[in-house]
Amino acid sequence: MRILLTGASSFTGFWFARALVQAGHEVVAVLRRRPEEYPDAVRRARARMVCDCCQTVCGPAFGDEAFLKVIEQRGPWHILAHHAADVTNYRSPDFDVMAAVANNTRGIQATLAALSSAGCRHVLLTGSVFENDEGAGSEGLEAFSPYGLSKAITAQIFRYYTRRADMVLGKFVIPNPFGPYEEPRFTAYLMKNWLARKPATVNTPAYVRDNIHVSLLAAEYVRFAEALAASTAPIRINPSGYVESQGAFAMRFAREIGRRLNLPCELVLKEQTEFIEPRVRINTDLPKTAGWSESAAWDQIAEYYAAGPPT
Image (cartoon, rainbow, N blue to C red; front, side, top):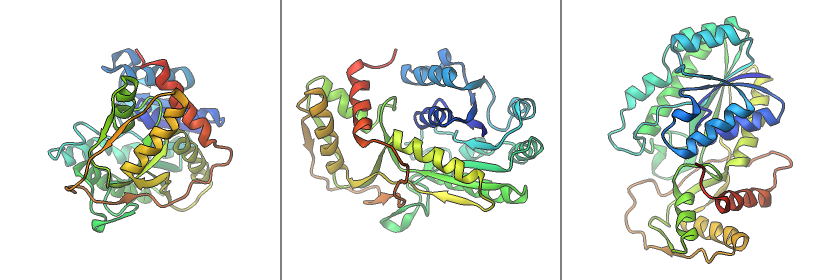
């Protein structure tokens, strides 16, 4: 397939781009910046590797005139894989929901019309388990955050306009991915402390979350994209990984990494008394990718951190 991919410099986007190419598909990745222009080293490294494995176009934003020209001049297309999303200050309670929605859906009618003219009938949209009414969990499945709300509204807009354009929408819902080249989030924090021979503290060990190896998530993304291309009706998937408390996941991570890197991987699990987020939020679909190796995925993580951070 010939796939137009947005958001390829992100943690998951980079893995999706590489997995699609390794599966034999032709990917044109639209990046907002040239690799050297990204401010942080990890994103620069991801963008460089995307440029190495994919055709890339640097500069356009989703739905703008330059993006429409890419659609018109570089087609035909089988799938638009819209993975990019506005994540500016996404953890903040002051995250601007409507500005993010506007950026995520800019020029959607013109974009879908241009895609249709270029032979594209399928749109693959990335969603989040932290949207309202996604996955399973406690507290009524409300939006997890303003960012989650922006993703849910974005999905409804795509649902409406793809149907009007007689296109087929696939929604790929992401839980909590982890692995090489991620931002400084939970597992990166664990590794930073352990490599410095310091214990790592887990402040919210009682939350039940769904952590998935990014290599498995990418394999599921490829499988889903291929299923979407053959579908005549909207489809969705909520791939799941390790469903357990954050304390149990941290202990799992410590066991797997500790024996591979010969590190003590000490943990301090705090007693959690505050629950400002839902206690449980998880995905629901067991992965079906054949040939993926869990042991090899842990090896990749150990090798990545043993080699040191990208520069």
